[in-house]
Image 1: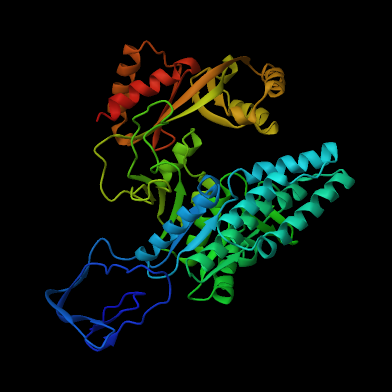
Image 2: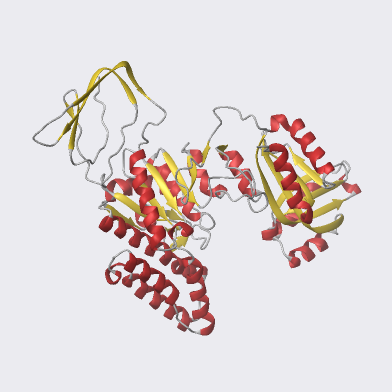
Length: 524
């Protein structure tokens, strides 16, 4: 029978089970709670470290069985810019990291974005140096200095070396008159590099934790050379494992830069939208962590946009596929690319609120353990879409028509969101972020050569992330609700995805439609 053990840092007690002594771990000043465990004929003793030794003994009657609040082995905690905006927020994040020490048997890995609006300020500084020849990092310097002063850290040792290098980079942009994507990635990397150095030093100096800051590219993160939106290479995962074994000691709390990596030539790259979330998920996957936590400013993933429905509720659980659909169709969830490493390696992601840490948040996992009673998981909205109606009698029985059609869109790199076909027509919506007036004019000219085409703008895609096996019920209830609101549905798409039903309405009807549907499917 193996002795039960747990990590404690209490300086006043020795904990013994049979003849096994639990070694004290030098860390923070909290007393960690023991996970509830039942023992059969096991004796647990807690002995004060003093001359008068009082022993507590409890003998339990059942065989050892871990309960649901079992400690996790290791977790990754990612914090975004709004959670790191100033010294006060950094202190709060420090408390959250301390809290995670209770929930895991090993030190968590902390991934940080840049503080507050630092990334935007760096890009503005680059444009100012390029266009006006002015080198000004005063706002970036002020934020870093203020954080150091309020946290009682040495700014000269901690941030001045990076700020000096940043000044030199901006001088180079000023004189060379060049701000390429490669230079832009190098420029914005200073935000994450500053934040991890400040935060790691604060935890080490004020909280007594054995922290070390790391740039992700020193821990094995390697990408292609698609600057500003680089792809993480598969070889990163074994490299991350090897680098952690070599560089990060067992009793070290690693604070890692999100968002940045290097290509094979050694140039700094950035991972694009959701890049810091991708860093956290990649670490969790590579190291086989129990959970990846992404801390935001809401109580997890909500049932719909709270700016439209004020009483939107947190969704306790979604699958990865459901989260992909929600993110694609406008919900403020993790970017699909950021979730892929965790999904491939079956690592749960938990979205939590740094302003309300007691809330359990939303867990994203590979599959549901229990079916949901509600047929709809969440409702998302994508605005300002373009609807294209293409009609041609050539399509009746003709092969190659759709191939010819999609070739026109592919050559212009225009993404299609939804599509519906009939015998002689095709209707589709176009991604508003990858489509402008010039694209419309070019597409209209090319498409007119093979069919009659009609563009209409100001449309909205409403997507019900749902249990499609109950699609008849969902569609019936949805259409009834929208009919009562006098909202016309112009297009429906269902079937290709097993997790969503989407339809098109006029953009100015979108808010009313969302409110009515939310009331129907999420009655309190």
